[in-house]
Amino acid sequence: NAGVTQTPKFQVLKTGQSMTLQCAQDMNHNSMYWYRQDPGMGLRLIYYSASEGTTDKGEVPNGYNVSRLNKREFSLRLESAAPSQTSVYFCASKSITDTQYFGPGTRLTVL
Amino acid sequence: AQSVTQLGSHVSVSEGALVLLRCNYSSSVPPYLFWYVQYPNQGLQLLLKYTTGATLVKGINGFEAEFKKSETSFHLTKPSAHMSDAAEYFCAGTSAGNSGYALNFGKGTSLLVTP
Image (cartoon, rainbow over all chains, first blue to last red):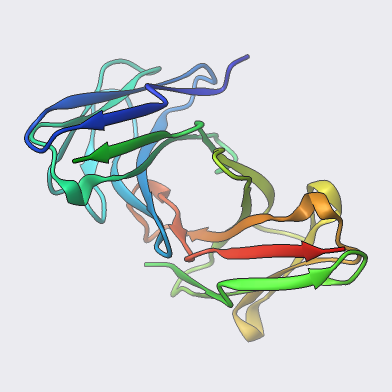
């Protein structure tokens, strides 16, 4: 039982490059989330998906897009990376008891 | 919508001393409240949560928290700190007013445990 997995673990991009962060969960959860973590800021919600086929913006969605490919997978795409998107990105899924389970994170640096 | 505030970005305690990490919430509807711990370069691990029922919640690793509606607080405590407790701690909350029950996080408290 892997829980929530994320790939890649680390990534360095140049300004303007694009990339997709992958997330998958094997707990059959309906809701999935993408957060970013910045020093002194806690975690902030980028996008969420309440169920397969639906996605909605969170607090800081600008510069990002998401896809809920199926119930297991929820990807985050940066179309044109900017230095302000340097951060640690966490994916999470929520159980029916309202507990969110987090992946190990992706550390992204944009030069 | 629901929000949380953690008081103190850094807390230092001696090994064996009481750990107290403070969290206050604001919500117009009954909140669900959580404490997560993050060790260096790792993801977040749930320590404990309050949804409904008993206001004193016990979690893993000897931690507990008490939901106090009158004080809008959900402080995290542990009677005796261990060196392995050194980590970043996040208080988080959600409610029916939050998007998809997404969590609102405090800014975190870094716990240092000294010998």
